[in-house]
Length: 284
Ligand SMILES: C[S@@+](CC[C@H](N)C(=O)[O-])C[C@H]1O[C@@H](n2cnc3c(N)ncnc32)[C@H](O)[C@@H]1O
Image: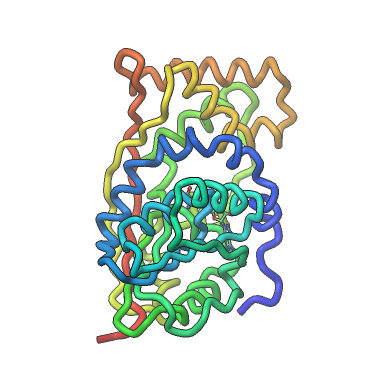
């Protein structure tokens, strides 16, 4: 296990106020992803679930309702501010069979063989040492249990990322090239690489399938363009290359023009490609 968790990612997420502020928009957009994850996880009433990188808690709350009062869901996340919102939402919804642990999944002791299912919606691509992280996570799974998670399949297959990124490049120029496997949203785009990580971490029966979903961001094209410009690759390029307000407005206008391909009336629907990854903790 790494003694020192990946500091850049940890710091980013611990202070990710915009993910808290945009929770409703993000959850509305990602609702089809959550539904697909829950379908694939096929949680039975009464089971115990660990939700890694649960953020502001949408998947933890939804899973808690599926497993019912005899079951239990633990949401784990490194970001205290996101978990504060997750706890508040869970309390307000009257959900009593979920709890949240502020924890680095790379190193935290979740207890041996404590969970029937481990799942994640986009919460496991940020580890500095993914093999060590998945070996640590595996200890928490009961024999015969399953892990299922969703990760982005790659930039070019995902206009939600590609359009804002290209718009920012068109306005400000290209950023320094980066390692496609570096911790971040696209780190698990290569299926063979992910399968190798999981096998090296001791997982069995690894299967990875690319699937398609539709993202459902709320609002008009202009609303969605603003959201896509302020969170994600465009905002990183604008920050890194010192863009000003006028640059941001130009990026946003380009994003709106290009997102129009995915709008009909006032509704924006953006196709997305994801890797659906499944593995079991024991070989049988
Ligand atoms: C893209 S967000 C996804 C959040 C949530 N699963 C969702 O779908 O709304 C990634 C999440 O992973 C969490 N995360 C990143 N590194 C982590 C780590 N080492 N241990 C636990 N959580 C981590 C972040 O704090 C963040 O909440």
